[in-house]
Length: 148
Image: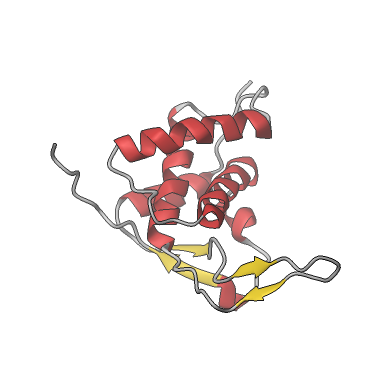
């Protein structure tokens, strides 16, 4: 039996696809951590990571769209199987005109994590519980496909 996609996930996806703003959370980290053996890691302030929230969310919504097209998660869709699908999606996403280049590993992982949680519990619950400063509005940036 398929897990039904929650209505708020479909609403967020529709808003995204139509270019309307979607309330979400920031994906990725501004700074990397430096490991210190025997001590707690500390923030590496020598380099600031650029965060491209629109592209990270574009990837997130492409994952959601794939599962919506397949009518949801199946019982055999464990998290490990989901991550394998995401691995395939990375190549497909780029082939469909999406751009993962320049996204940090944390942004990619954040997009995959948010999509997984939204598919399981809905968009509101997936994004709920963060401080107000962590919320953002993202809008789909329509990119022209590069002609080869």
